[in-house]
Length: 115
Image 1 (cartoon, rainbow, N blue to C red):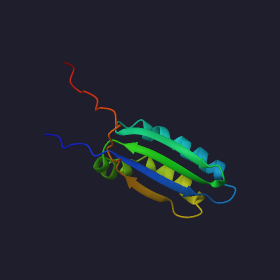
Image 2: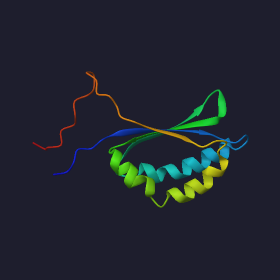
Image 3: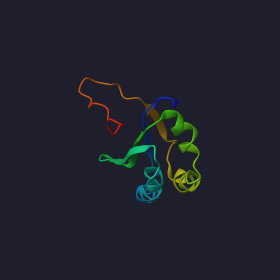
Image 4: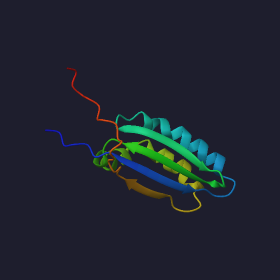
């Protein structure tokens, strides 16, 4: 029996060196198609801070926490991404992992059977 999935949201906040925001954004956007193509990547958005051009937020939804930590974070395409972006950070990125709290207004789960 397959263990149940443990969906998560990952929020990554970046502060970029002065004058490097556009370069960072282009490197990040070039990397994201690799992530979005992954079967367990459900959604991914990039935000910039309208009051601080040096701040960005990456908002990711993944189908399973364990798979994200043990597989996705070790993908080979992450190395060139890190090489292209880490040098542009003004401070270490901040990463948090969240679980959504179920609510009464959640849509019903999708049916997986075809009957």
